[in-house]
Image 1 (tube, rainbow, N blue to C red):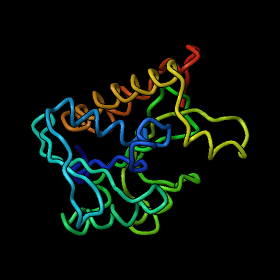
Image 2: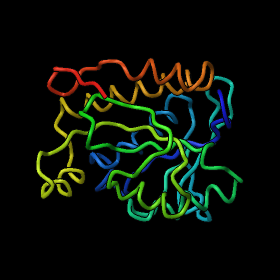
Image 3: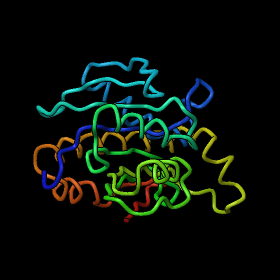
Image 4: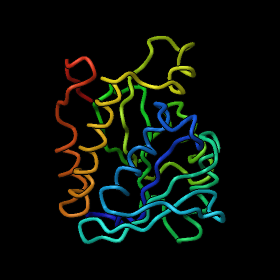
Length: 203
């Protein structure tokens, strides 16, 4: 992979059983899926304000991490992770839910703004903007006033399956990132995919 090698994957979400199946926890869904796929499980890492597990993917040693801070304080945990393992922002991939993509879509991105996402806003404040992102589409409720309840709500069955499918495609793309490079993985992932309504979506 061109540039610095990927060393850690952070999933964003809110801790606790009440939040486990909410749209805002799509980042947790991704790292949980990776842990299951590669036969490992998370352990408490109190000094890092989260849970972590080492994992080997396509021959590469990586660290999976879930902050146990709430979403709007994610940056504190990610900063602790980066400091403890001496990670640069470019070595960290952050997986998060994205209102601007429909359920079923997933996109890789290098750097950029936080687009109002409270987890990314917090990471920007603690680490800067130069980390990698995996955007997992959850769709938008249509009006700003409904966003908070929407992201903290649970998706319906069809929508949930679309998000799970996107997580699976993103996991496959991650292996391409590690073996063939970022550009190849982006090309593979950023193709037309079905959204929850079956109409498809493009970036």
